[in-house]
Image (cartoon, rainbow, N blue to C red; front, side, top):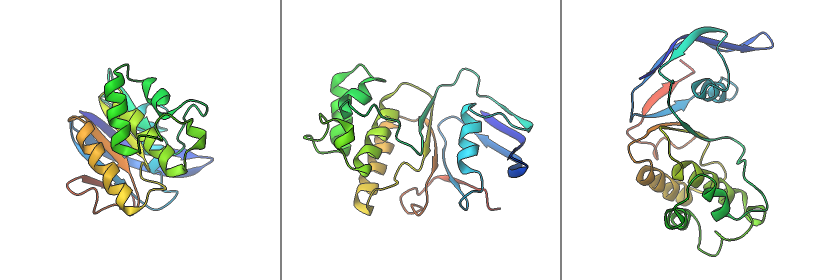
Length: 187
């Protein structure tokens, strides 16, 4: 179990998280909510060990592999979608099957720099889902997607998460993330 024990974090004297207590059991699905600037991305960075708390501590991360989708897609621009996902998964059939569940087949072999923002977002999601690891950490994975594509991406996410722990920051998608536990940073 991952546990936040009184975690606080500030930047330039401005507190973004204060005294947070939170427990995540293996296999749980969490949606993190909160107003813009309240610390959702910082929370995810703390969870993955990319930031350190100013006070408090986080336990239970030892030995876990985190699979992120950052707010920026972080793709290799001149590589295809297949090439980008193949960075984390050597199973070519799995890579193509997963990508075809999210994109049209003609798009998966194009350089990602030629794809729309929403298509690029789906490639980033596919890369996280295809990788081996323990905790999927998705920061706005549905940004730039229309409602129908959000539903498709959510279904693929559930199919390929394979029981792994899932933590999602996403705005306006409460109906898509039914059954998720909620961490509301506004409270």
